[in-house]
Amino acid sequence: MAMAIGDSIYASTCLSSDPYDTERADSLIHVLGNVGKPGVSLLIPPPSSRVLKLKTNNQVGLFNETSLHLLLTEYRVPYVVEHQGARDIQTFFQEAAVSIYDNGTWFGDIDIMKAVSQDSLVTRTPSACTHGVLPMADPADWQAVGKEKRKKKKKAKAVAAATPTGERVGEFQNRIRTIENWYELLDKPSAPVIARTRRNWMASLAFTGLNSQLGHRTRILPVHCAKRDALRTSKFMNSMAFEGEVIIE
Image (cartoon, rainbow, N blue to C red; front, side):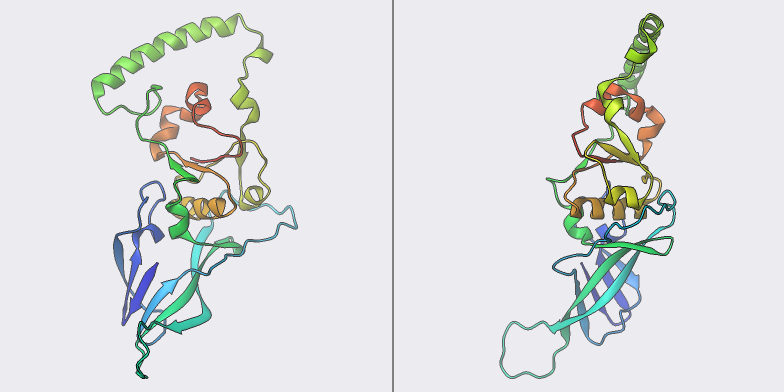
Protein backbone atom coordinates (compact mmCIF):
# COMPACT_ATOMS: atom_id res chain seq x y z
CA MET A 1 0.00 0.00 0.00
CA ALA A 2 3.02 2.34 0.32
CA MET A 3 6.80 2.55 -0.05
CA ALA A 4 9.00 4.56 2.31
CA ILE A 5 12.51 5.53 1.21
CA GLY A 6 14.68 8.28 2.67
CA ASP A 7 12.50 11.25 3.56
CA SER A 8 9.71 10.29 1.15
CA ILE A 9 6.64 8.05 1.31
CA TYR A 10 4.90 6.99 -1.89
CA ALA A 11 1.40 5.73 -1.08
CA SER A 12 -1.64 4.56 -3.00
CA THR A 13 -4.13 7.39 -3.55
CA CYS A 14 -6.91 5.28 -2.03
CA LEU A 15 -5.31 5.81 1.39
CA SER A 16 -6.00 9.54 1.29
CA SER A 17 -9.07 9.92 -0.92
CA ASP A 18 -12.83 9.74 -0.64
CA PRO A 19 -13.91 6.13 -1.32
CA TYR A 20 -16.50 7.37 -3.84
CA ASP A 21 -13.73 8.79 -6.06
CA THR A 22 -11.22 5.95 -5.69
CA GLU A 23 -12.05 2.59 -7.26
CA ARG A 24 -8.52 1.68 -8.34
CA ALA A 25 -5.21 1.63 -6.51
CA ASP A 26 -2.83 2.17 -9.44
CA SER A 27 -1.85 5.81 -8.78
CA LEU A 28 0.41 7.25 -6.09
CA ILE A 29 0.80 10.33 -3.93
CA HIS A 30 4.11 11.65 -2.58
CA VAL A 31 4.33 12.62 1.10
CA LEU A 32 7.37 14.06 2.85
CA GLY A 33 8.27 11.94 5.88
CA ASN A 34 9.57 8.53 6.89
CA VAL A 35 8.68 5.52 9.03
CA GLY A 36 11.91 5.52 11.03
CA LYS A 37 13.34 2.41 9.34
CA PRO A 38 16.56 2.12 7.28
CA GLY A 39 16.56 1.24 3.59
CA VAL A 40 13.39 0.81 1.55
CA SER A 41 10.24 -0.22 3.44
CA LEU A 42 7.39 -1.77 1.45
CA LEU A 43 4.35 -1.32 3.68
CA ILE A 44 1.90 -4.22 3.64
CA PRO A 45 -1.31 -4.77 5.66
CA PRO A 46 -1.60 -7.57 8.24
CA PRO A 47 -3.07 -10.85 6.90
CA SER A 48 -6.02 -10.44 9.26
CA SER A 49 -7.41 -7.33 10.93
CA ARG A 50 -8.78 -6.84 14.43
CA VAL A 51 -12.15 -5.30 15.28
CA LEU A 52 -13.41 -4.00 18.61
CA LYS A 53 -15.57 -6.53 20.47
CA LEU A 54 -18.83 -4.86 21.41
CA LYS A 55 -19.27 -5.00 25.20
CA THR A 56 -20.85 -1.69 26.14
CA ASN A 57 -23.52 0.63 24.85
CA ASN A 58 -21.42 3.75 24.96
CA GLN A 59 -22.22 6.55 22.55
CA VAL A 60 -19.81 8.67 20.55
CA GLY A 61 -20.27 11.59 18.15
CA LEU A 62 -21.53 11.51 14.60
CA PHE A 63 -18.19 10.37 13.13
CA ASN A 64 -16.87 13.94 13.43
CA GLU A 65 -13.93 12.81 15.59
CA THR A 66 -12.94 9.88 13.35
CA SER A 67 -9.27 9.60 12.38
CA LEU A 68 -7.02 6.99 10.76
CA HIS A 69 -3.61 6.06 12.21
CA LEU A 70 -0.74 4.06 10.72
CA LEU A 71 0.85 1.60 13.17
CA LEU A 72 3.98 -0.38 12.32
CA THR A 73 4.03 -3.90 13.74
CA GLU A 74 7.06 -6.01 14.66
CA TYR A 75 6.80 -8.00 11.42
CA ARG A 76 9.65 -6.92 9.12
CA VAL A 77 11.30 -9.32 6.65
CA PRO A 78 13.85 -8.69 3.87
CA TYR A 79 12.71 -8.61 0.25
CA VAL A 80 14.87 -11.03 -1.73
CA VAL A 81 14.37 -12.84 -5.04
CA GLU A 82 17.56 -14.89 -4.98
CA HIS A 83 19.79 -16.24 -2.22
CA GLN A 84 23.40 -16.00 -3.39
CA GLY A 85 25.15 -15.15 -0.16
CA ALA A 86 24.51 -11.39 -0.23
CA ARG A 87 24.40 -9.96 3.29
CA ASP A 88 23.61 -6.32 2.57
CA ILE A 89 19.80 -6.20 2.42
CA GLN A 90 18.34 -2.79 1.56
CA THR A 91 14.63 -3.53 0.98
CA PHE A 92 12.14 -4.92 3.51
CA PHE A 93 8.49 -5.83 3.79
CA GLN A 94 7.15 -3.87 6.76
CA GLU A 95 3.75 -4.78 8.15
CA ALA A 96 1.60 -1.72 8.91
CA ALA A 97 -1.94 -1.58 10.27
CA VAL A 98 -4.38 1.27 9.55
CA SER A 99 -6.41 1.81 12.73
CA ILE A 100 -9.73 3.61 13.21
CA TYR A 101 -10.07 5.90 16.21
CA ASP A 102 -13.00 8.08 17.21
CA ASN A 103 -12.65 10.48 20.13
CA GLY A 104 -9.70 8.42 21.40
CA THR A 105 -11.46 5.04 21.17
CA TRP A 106 -10.04 2.30 18.93
CA PHE A 107 -12.64 0.52 16.79
CA GLY A 108 -10.60 -1.70 14.49
CA ASP A 109 -7.87 -2.13 11.89
CA ILE A 110 -8.77 -2.08 8.20
CA ASP A 111 -7.25 -3.04 4.85
CA ILE A 112 -8.26 0.01 2.80
CA MET A 113 -6.90 -1.13 -0.57
CA LYS A 114 -8.79 -4.41 -0.35
CA ALA A 115 -12.01 -2.72 0.77
CA VAL A 116 -12.27 -0.01 -1.91
CA SER A 117 -11.58 -2.52 -4.72
CA GLN A 118 -14.16 -5.12 -3.67
CA ASP A 119 -16.75 -4.81 -6.44
CA SER A 120 -18.90 -7.49 -4.85
CA LEU A 121 -19.29 -5.51 -1.61
CA VAL A 122 -18.77 -1.84 -2.54
CA THR A 123 -21.06 -0.04 -5.01
CA ARG A 124 -20.88 3.62 -6.06
CA THR A 125 -24.18 5.16 -7.16
CA PRO A 126 -23.69 7.20 -10.38
CA SER A 127 -23.91 10.97 -10.01
CA ALA A 128 -26.85 11.06 -12.43
CA CYS A 129 -30.08 9.06 -12.24
CA THR A 130 -33.40 8.66 -14.04
CA HIS A 131 -35.52 9.44 -10.98
CA GLY A 132 -35.19 13.22 -11.25
CA VAL A 133 -33.27 13.22 -7.95
CA LEU A 134 -29.65 13.46 -9.03
CA PRO A 135 -28.52 15.92 -11.75
CA MET A 136 -28.67 14.95 -15.40
CA ALA A 137 -25.73 15.44 -17.73
CA ASP A 138 -27.77 17.77 -19.99
CA PRO A 139 -29.45 20.83 -18.36
CA ALA A 140 -32.40 20.42 -20.75
CA ASP A 141 -32.96 16.90 -19.42
CA TRP A 142 -32.96 18.22 -15.87
CA GLN A 143 -35.52 20.92 -16.73
CA ALA A 144 -37.81 18.31 -18.28
CA VAL A 145 -37.48 16.11 -15.22
CA GLY A 146 -38.20 19.09 -12.96
CA LYS A 147 -41.38 19.87 -14.84
CA GLU A 148 -42.52 16.27 -14.59
CA LYS A 149 -41.59 16.20 -10.91
CA ARG A 150 -43.77 19.24 -10.19
CA LYS A 151 -46.71 17.53 -11.85
CA LYS A 152 -46.19 14.39 -9.79
CA LYS A 153 -45.82 16.43 -6.60
CA LYS A 154 -49.12 18.18 -7.24
CA LYS A 155 -50.82 14.86 -7.89
CA ALA A 156 -49.20 13.30 -4.80
CA LYS A 157 -50.57 16.10 -2.61
CA ALA A 158 -54.08 15.40 -3.87
CA VAL A 159 -53.69 11.68 -3.19
CA ALA A 160 -52.16 12.29 0.25
CA ALA A 161 -55.05 14.52 1.24
CA ALA A 162 -57.44 11.63 0.64
CA THR A 163 -55.23 8.96 2.25
CA PRO A 164 -55.20 8.17 6.00
CA THR A 165 -51.87 9.09 7.64
CA GLY A 166 -51.11 5.53 8.69
CA GLU A 167 -51.15 4.34 5.07
CA ARG A 168 -48.65 6.89 3.72
CA VAL A 169 -45.49 5.20 5.01
CA GLY A 170 -43.85 3.03 2.34
CA GLU A 171 -42.19 -0.32 2.78
CA PHE A 172 -38.66 1.08 2.59
CA GLN A 173 -39.31 3.82 5.15
CA ASN A 174 -40.54 1.17 7.57
CA ARG A 175 -37.28 -0.78 7.29
CA ILE A 176 -34.61 1.90 7.01
CA ARG A 177 -32.43 2.75 10.02
CA THR A 178 -29.81 5.43 10.63
CA ILE A 179 -26.37 4.68 12.09
CA GLU A 180 -25.20 7.46 14.38
CA ASN A 181 -21.87 6.07 15.66
CA TRP A 182 -19.36 3.24 15.38
CA TYR A 183 -21.01 1.14 18.10
CA GLU A 184 -24.19 0.99 16.03
CA LEU A 185 -22.22 -0.27 13.05
CA LEU A 186 -20.72 -3.09 15.12
CA ASP A 187 -24.24 -3.95 16.30
CA LYS A 188 -25.92 -3.32 12.93
CA PRO A 189 -29.47 -4.62 12.41
CA SER A 190 -30.35 -6.79 9.41
CA ALA A 191 -32.35 -3.94 7.80
CA PRO A 192 -30.75 -1.42 5.40
CA VAL A 193 -29.09 1.44 7.26
CA ILE A 194 -27.79 4.91 6.40
CA ALA A 195 -24.57 6.43 7.73
CA ARG A 196 -24.09 10.17 7.24
CA THR A 197 -20.34 10.45 6.72
CA ARG A 198 -20.03 11.88 3.19
CA ARG A 199 -19.07 15.35 4.43
CA ASN A 200 -15.98 13.78 6.04
CA TRP A 201 -13.90 11.82 3.53
CA MET A 202 -11.78 10.20 6.24
CA ALA A 203 -14.85 8.93 8.08
CA SER A 204 -16.31 7.65 4.79
CA LEU A 205 -13.06 5.85 4.01
CA ALA A 206 -12.88 4.30 7.48
CA PHE A 207 -16.55 3.33 7.38
CA THR A 208 -16.22 1.69 3.95
CA GLY A 209 -13.18 -0.29 5.11
CA LEU A 210 -14.66 -1.56 8.36
CA ASN A 211 -18.10 -2.23 6.90
CA SER A 212 -16.65 -4.31 4.05
CA GLN A 213 -14.41 -6.12 6.48
CA LEU A 214 -17.51 -7.10 8.48
CA GLY A 215 -18.95 -8.59 5.28
CA HIS A 216 -21.71 -6.01 4.74
CA ARG A 217 -22.63 -4.58 1.35
CA THR A 218 -21.76 -0.89 1.06
CA ARG A 219 -23.35 1.66 -1.27
CA ILE A 220 -21.73 5.10 -1.51
CA LEU A 221 -23.88 8.01 -2.66
CA PRO A 222 -22.43 11.13 -4.32
CA VAL A 223 -21.95 14.17 -2.10
CA HIS A 224 -24.74 16.18 -3.73
CA CYS A 225 -27.33 13.44 -3.09
CA ALA A 226 -28.88 15.10 -0.04
CA LYS A 227 -29.37 18.37 -1.93
CA ARG A 228 -31.74 16.60 -4.30
CA ASP A 229 -33.69 14.94 -1.47
CA ALA A 230 -32.63 11.51 -2.68
CA LEU A 231 -33.01 9.96 0.76
CA ARG A 232 -36.64 11.08 0.89
CA THR A 233 -37.52 9.68 -2.53
CA SER A 234 -39.06 6.23 -2.18
CA LYS A 235 -38.56 5.31 -5.85
CA PHE A 236 -34.87 6.16 -5.71
CA MET A 237 -34.17 4.44 -2.39
CA ASN A 238 -36.27 1.34 -3.06
CA SER A 239 -34.50 0.77 -6.38
CA MET A 240 -31.07 0.50 -4.77
CA ALA A 241 -31.50 -0.67 -1.17
CA PHE A 242 -30.86 -4.30 -0.27
CA GLU A 243 -31.44 -6.17 2.95
CA GLY A 244 -28.53 -5.64 5.30
CA GLU A 245 -26.89 -3.02 3.07
CA VAL A 246 -25.17 0.07 4.47
CA ILE A 247 -25.71 3.29 2.55
CA ILE A 248 -23.06 5.98 3.04
CA GLU A 249 -24.50 9.45 2.53
